[in-house]
Length: 183
Image (cartoon, rainbow, N blue to C red; front, top):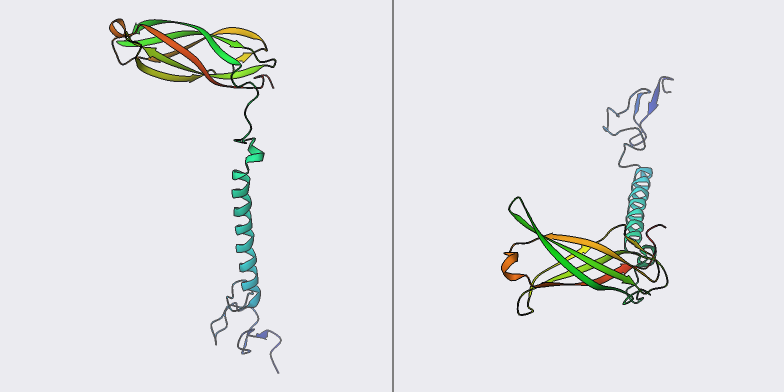
């Protein structure tokens, strides 16, 4: 008969004290979660790893789902080609030994709806019409109502001598968001 203050080991069935966490005979832990030989430990471990793997797959699917992001490469924007740069002029200012090119661009919206965030490309042209430099700027927060036009200013630093080489600049609108900036 066993002592009421004792119990048997769950692995080797040897008697041990009731408060013992490790069997003195086989040295195995008595808690089911700390014992790697208990089938419940294996089941909890497999289910935990499986839930982490499923969460990882869901996260990857969420990041790569193009419909959720609104990216569909086959659908062309309805305002493409309807937002154009019609006029541009430039000035060069020198500050702290850095020549800075400022370009004013008249952007015309021929689309019936509002457009926002136009991306403007500026080509800096030389004497023979060759392209000396190019830069692209997005005018964030700019909202252009339907069938209207507005002047925008973009700027960039120059690495060449502007008095000898720059003859003109040519601006073009690369793309625009076909929704209003005030959504």
